[in-house]
Image (tube, rainbow, N blue to C red):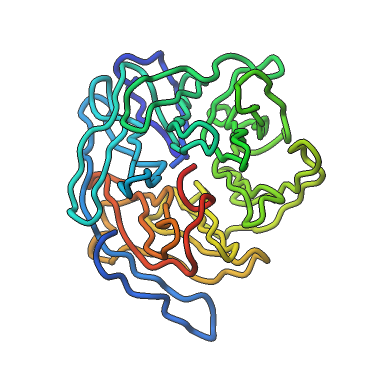
Length: 337
């Protein structure tokens, strides 16, 4: 999640100080060191966007592989008519627009295991939008209040049955700890608050066994674990990891096949990798020569069944895809959200 420009987005209602969530070449593996976590050097694949004149920034998010192996990426601050979802061929290092509209500020993307459609979270308007895999047939899946309050949906995760679990960053712009985790049935007809009183929840991902959810809180730099019980409801919750980010804040989360957490950082072009027991295993960093114009590494998608990982990195230099070798193979939990 990160701050949007003070200038209003074209075609959107005034967002105020809206806080948002936030490849193909050989990458080095982690440098191990007995004194602490290793360093994984990511390498640039391609630049996808430049800073938009209308919005004053660009912010890439929500990387997810489609069924053809192409990487889809959303641009949160793209103005009306500009590409809001890009489709990237990571091998050829090329990209083309997949979808745009007149108002959405999309912060994440994920394919449903139930209907195969692409789901996007519109942080600015509280909507969940779905698309056909080719970017056509846009539909509003959910809109409106949950328990009497509007949502600011940031990231999302699906359970194996296709029900949605959403980080609702309500209260972020006011600095209030009133964020929530919301469960939506796969037909969009029933919404349930699983956790509330959260500090700008951002990243959300199931653990490797779908027993619980990892949820990052942007303004507290911590990761919660929500153990789920019957019917997908919360059985317990606790603080699992405290992230020493300094000026950087916890953004989106992905989980690999071994259960390791890839925690994106807003305010630094890097990701922190933790074991499921909270051990800081590694830090993924862009080359030092690139870092000056980059200020966030929001999210990552690990190739399903493989270890090649692609993270979205943005800043005044533009929006990029970077690649590195993950510590374990990719699964649904490390592909979108």
